[in-house]
Image (cartoon, rainbow, N blue to C red):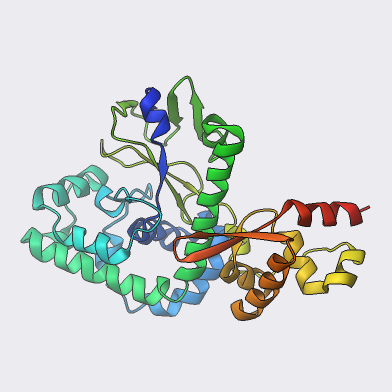
Length: 319
């Protein structure tokens, strides 16, 4: 059990971040125990052959039977635009003491593969992570990032419309917020209480957790939680459309309009509907120009959302 205690100024400083390195580290959970991550089975199947050529000795030493990973793989991102290159650069400069401490916190000792000079072990660690990224993440990262960014936009909209408490109580069944205290029910039997004290609480959506989780040690306050929309990432989907709207807009545009009750990028929509992102973009521009969608930029992605007019059009024809 972990409790983060927020004062009034801390409540106002809750922020979101996206960490490519965090995704890399947490992906080892799905690789080690696929049965616990059914939503990522398509990703695991697509990358199975590529993973056979990786430094599996090093990657296997970064996770234990509880699916815990060392905290140096879960850095607190500065915001939603964090770059992997920057995170790996910081990891290369990790102190030997912190490297060994984080490994011991997970395994109770330093795994044999990391025996010897810590600087040599850290270089091998970074090289293994770079290979993992190139083989299994780089081809799919635009899709994954689109889902993570859409989640951040959705949570921000929740705060604006319903307040921080509603948002925090909705990110995971194992996370609760009441009276200035955020409780994360972890599998760790130890109880920890940590005051935010101006450090800020960072919320990090991820593709590779099924419940709220946090760093193993007493690092900067951070909660990793399951991002919305993962189930639609790998599979094409079909949305039932009101016939009258489809007759006016066409089947594809009506489907997109019906699907955009939550923000999504053209990349994500292309995957969900099984069409190219360029084709989706053409339809989205037409719908936006007609006032049926609104768009906003989030980092390098443009997210689309059904407008009030678009919602009214669907509602008026759904009966």
